[in-house]
Length: 185
Image (tube, rainbow, N blue to C red):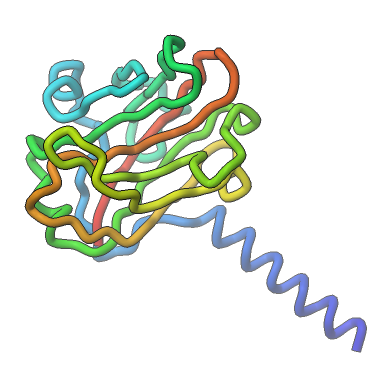
């Protein structure tokens, strides 16, 4: 009995590890952004920094798909938060309104500096520049150092004009965070 229980636990553990290691978008996804064609101009046109600085990352070590990703660095003038908002000018915005699930890769460079409560990573909607509702709240314990595949249900209506990707950090350090391969399905 004890050997049987140990075998079941080992199989479950291997299943959990392989799921995290091989997480990826499903085959039927629609790509919103992979940043391969991103330039400083397109970042300025489609993305709005909020308590952060944005740049196109071209270091393949911090790109999950292809050779580029979005690099967001916390603005030291704000004590905790770093956000980036995707706006409705993006050419694939309409796809966000037509699907029920959103997925993306996020690279957490400094796991220990992430806020420990339920607002470590969050997604929220904006309408007319005002906060509307939270879609997803994650704790530090839900995230691993390195790449994390994040997915959540979304129900966006026509009144939504921005989708916020938000992160909360401790300390006064410039902590880079990378976002790559945003898709819906």
